[in-house]
Amino acid sequence: MFENKINGMNFISGAWPLDPGKPTVIFIHGSGGSSVMWKAQVKGLSGSFNTIAVDLPGHGKSEGFGMNSIKAYSDAVADFIKDIEAPSPVACGLSMGGAISLQLLLDNKEMFKTGILINTGAKLRVLPLILNMVQNDYKSYVDSFALTAAAPTTDYSVMMDIIEANAQCNPFVVYNDFMACDSFDVMSRLPEITMPVLVMTAVEDKLSPPKYGTYLADNIKSSVLVSIDGAGHMSPVEKPAEVNGAIADYIGRIVF
Image (cartoon, rainbow, N blue to C red):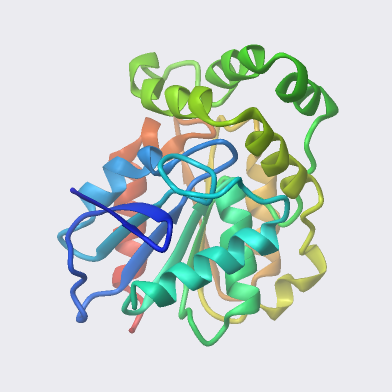
């Protein structure tokens, strides 16, 4: 894998420079996370596609102080995609990253032929308890995330990089991430998405329950719904082979 930074945005890629003959999957992490959560996808799918995982502003090794709206993050990712001149970009996000991907598909229809929405929803209300923990007892939040973000059967060791990324993120940035999620609501706009979309849920996801994904699939006309068994909210880390297989199969059927 390669690591680069362009205009303050840090990212990892399966290869560099990008192959102009391949679609480019842009992986977008969730609240308080970083590109580290997508390592298995960036490496595992790099033979078939250009693979890029970003650190959003204020996260990981990217510059900035984070943002407090999904729209602002979406604009930053759209600018990044233009900066790297990504061939045939595919927005692929989890949780808050999924919301960012939805916003990208809604606001930049000319840029995308498809998108991938993983463990996310058209509306992402955040429990006041989580906001309170992030503000007043950040360690407790990180500890609770470690317990709730994966299925009970998941090997805890595979979560360590994700937990470390959350622990190192500035609590102020994480709080703004959650506030951005809490105010996000594009339920009424889903019929505007006319390009094909892959919606992926995880059977044991407690943070973005499968019903969120079912709603997306029911209201996005050209959608495909895939469920990952034996995984929780962090299914790309918990079940990388299954997630990679679903992504590769789906993109392989899209004409670019």
